[in-house]
Each structure stands twice: as structure tokens, then as C-alpha cells.
Image (cartoon, rainbow, N blue to C red; front, side, top):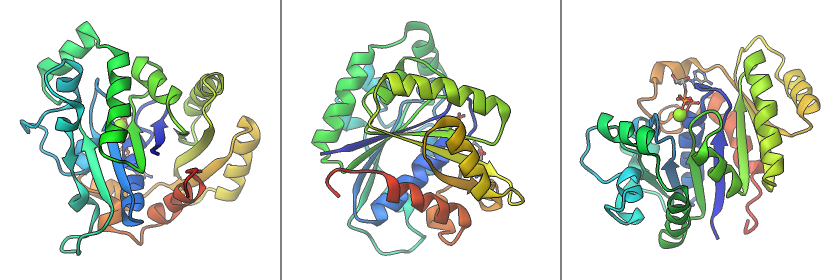
Length: 258
Ligand SMILES: Nc1ncnc2c1ncn2[C@@H]1O[C@H](COP(=O)(O)OP(=O)(O)OP(=O)(O)O)[C@@H](O)[C@H]1O
Ligand SMILES: [Mg+2]
């Protein structure tokens, strides 16, 4: 059975894609088969962290949504990207379904939309055909059709927020939505906390305000800024405090078969 995890935030740039990619790495290093799907069809990005050329001719989620291929034809094995250079292979896998970076294809999605039910079917068949232990869904910020779908089908929703008034207000909206959709597990992930901030106090304050557990408070990370989405921190600097803090999310995710 696949445990589906969506990473979402009301506002953009909170750190969702880096969190999804690094979580995928941590889970694969534990030996799991992990799928990552970029449902940020309007502004895809996570492929960059796995070193995928945006001009690749490989099939994308868009091709599947337009009936040009099967969903499994869009899958790229990016396991090597989550390992330090030269490291031996691992039992786990990271399998990425990218979205198209072609201007015309993004424009077509914006103009014509797509069948959300087909996306749902694609996700379910991906879980089955690839025998995934986890599927991580990287979403577009804000509330739209694909984020509503991904929240509705998730076993666990990670809601990412920065210590910022706009994020606080937006998170309240998304949390209410997730509660109405009856997501089994809701976890808040606070990102980009300054080192000078008292993280224990921040966690307690946010948990009290939202009545929702905060899985971790991730530090503003110079390592991540230096990397600039050109790789996975777990592979490049596994000793980074960001990676250590993210490990807590893996620990808290309640996969029923573990
Ligand atoms: N903890 C952190 N410390 C420093 N920089 C970070 C941290 N987390 C993310 N970033 C940086 O913030 C930027 C946005 O990160 P990312 O793309 O992961 O966010 P996102 O929520 O997926 O954005 P979008 O909403 O556009 O999809 C990137 O430049 C990334 O390197
Ligand atoms: Mg993103």
C-alpha cells in the first residue's frame, strides 16, 4: 500500500519542493520505493533538484494528461541524484514524474485546463504499477484544482509555512480546507526560521494557534541557499542541520505498514 504525502503551502516560495525532494531522499536511503510527482503544472520546478534538463524530450505529466502516453512512461529514475557522488547504489528508489517546462505546454494548461479525474487515475495507477511505498506530491501554492485533489487523496498533508504574517493567515485557510477534506494526518512544517529564533517556543506557539502538530522547525539554511535548487541537500551535505530537522518529519509520518 502506498502512503501518499502532499506538501503544500498557501503562499509560494515557502520551500515545498526542497522539502519534497529531500524527504524523498531520506525515505529512499531507508530502502523505500518513493515516487515524486510534480503536480505544479503551472510552474514546475522540482525536476531541477534532481538534475533533470528542462529541455529533455522525455514524456511528462502533461503528455499523460493529454492522452499521449501512459503515466508510467513519464517516470524518470532519479535515485542517483539523492546519493553523494560516487556512493554505492541503494535498495531504495526515487522515481520522478516531471511536468513540462515547455512554454507552449504550460500555456495550454493555463488556457484549456485538464481533466482532474484523469490526474487522480494517473496517481493511483502510478502507485500500483511502480509498487511505491510512498508517493510525494509536490504542489502549486494556493488553492486550485490539483491541490484540492492532492489534499483529498493524501494520507498525510505537510503544510509548509514561514514565520511570516501572510503565511500564518494563509495557513489558517488551507488547514480549514484540509480538515473539511478529512485528511488523516496533518503536520505543519515551519521553514526558514532564523537561527536567533527560539525554535521550541516558535513550535509551541504555532501548535497552540492552529491546534495542529508542528513536525519540525527547519532553519534558514545557508547550505540550501548556496545549493540554489541545483541538487539535494541530503546528498550534498547530509550533516546539515536542515537535513537533521527534516528527519523528524519521516519519523512522524504514520505509514500504517511500518
Ligand atoms: N530552509 C531554507 N533556507 C534557505 N533557503 C531555503 C530554505 N528552504 C527553501 N529555500 C530556498 O527558497 C527558495 C524556494 O524554495 P522551493 O522552491 O523549495 O519553494 P517552493 O515552496 O517549492 O516554491 P514554489 O511555491 O514556487 O513552488 C529556493 O531558492 C530555495 O533554495
Ligand atoms: Mg515548488
